[in-house]
Image (cartoon, rainbow, N blue to C red; front, top):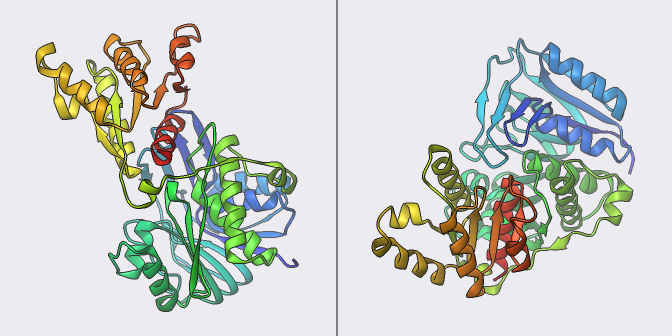
Length: 405
């Protein structure tokens, strides 16, 4: 447990409209902050402009790590409407020179502004690009022991395989990429850890709130710390990383060692039918009369679909019409669904009826309400609905409820 950890990756401006977030972090910046909580020396290499360099140096002085900048005219900005939204990425400048690093222990993230050339004894690599991930060694980087941290899309892209078996994908990646460990993040199904020609599954956790932006950064950083610095096995390191990421989701910050040891999040126990590939159906209840209401219904539908759920939406699947035209078809949708996700701000009469009908037939209901009083929500809470005033947290509550059925 000696020596420093080198982190290489992006430091970006991050803007989120709701909930409001305006900070300079990025993958490498967030990873440095996370690992600094454990008191290990850190060298952070990134492409920085004057403002991001100033911010990171001030943060480094407070948190205890070193900043090694490669200067660029202006840093990249990620802008989100909310934590599950696809960000708008502004890359105003790129670097004329590559970052070159030799390290004992390395955590490397994919970069936008320029190339990275790394030589390491141990390395953890997260490409962070679902559409076109770059292999660790694409620019000549080498590592004696390499661990890949990937989501399912990245794993299939890098392996060139469309196989439904992630175990086969991970095995091929180990062989093709000369990796000792492959970790494939699977959302509500946890993470598959492939090492030593065998695999194990690390469980995910449920949290009351979900702060989504940066969760992948934290997982990679925590895995790297425990695998390289604490010399834990890959499965043990991934287990600690999953728990630390849950802490970050719930609190918005990375844990200290003491807080991580004391933290006891609820494990998500998925049903056998979910594990076998069943895609639960979510009934999307909510008003769709104004542009704002229509936008939110469209956004919720897209976010639920992106998490692997099926969605029955009265607006999309039934449409507008008279009571004779739409009511029975909507009720049929409620009968057939697994979970209801209801937008209840505004206390729309139709939505509240759908919620009451769903609870009368024992369907789980997750209600998203930011602007309603406790008194107005009393019947929902008292009848067993899960009520959340945070959009991203509500979406995940619906996912978890569906996965457990």
